[in-house]
Length: 387
Image (cartoon, rainbow, N blue to C red; front, side, top):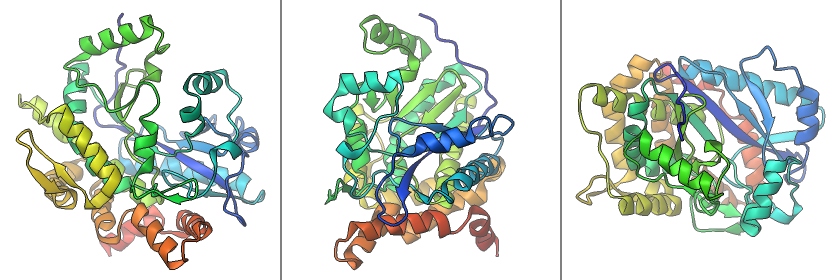
């Protein structure tokens, strides 16, 4: 089969952010996406952003248009959140984001009434019904299809860095899991989810799709749910490894880091260089370490098996990528990675709140609601960096 890869401007950015809907008093999830989406129907037709439903009715997803810069894409997200709040605030629906809800139970949730979601649940059963997970997706434009899989394979080396920065699911159904990102390990239970296969080129990808479609595993390329995947319809590489970010500045920071990595690798290919890769078993081990330990993980960074604390390797990588971030116009957002390293990722903040509240996970949810609503806006955050 032939799968066309759409034309896309190099290193442009698109963002998707999955948000929970919660009751402001109890902190529990509420199945009210349908009424929000109905109230917004048609309102975004002339806007760059979209607001859509997801697998569960306790979730809405806000999506940017194609941004020439991170700032442009984030501005779309701000507009989308504003539209949701205009409906949600009078209805006492609060917004928050993390990789998991600290105490909600899967059996209390409702599946969105769409055939593809019902088919997913029918096939995956208990694991599908347990998909109470929220994430972000960062799309980066690729101008040449020949670059797609070399860049995906190189990005896989940095998957634990992205997981560590975004890790925000230390609790699951009321239990402290001991993992920084429980979501990372839950999501990979779905068919076709998890780590990308180390394919060499687009021809191998088309053969993979042909095999999977011919044997009934999937209907089309949209059902490839890898942590990093090609998005042929948009002409992008889509990074899906991250837990849901709890604040807008953190979303911007991870998006800028991702965009800068992709552009760096694209330049390396332009210069005729071979991109770095490591053995698939190292990539798998790194994913587990980042899920377990977050930013305290020690990760394998080259094919010799050299191990480095992920915090240390992030600092090294940021120094290397800084000129690229400057060229892309996202240097300030990019510097937000240092803020995460300094202040801790969301999983660490949630654990701190839980410990201070003697394990009361409702306090953790209220913390996430406050952080999402009253935490620094991106504009305030960037102003503080320049001041």
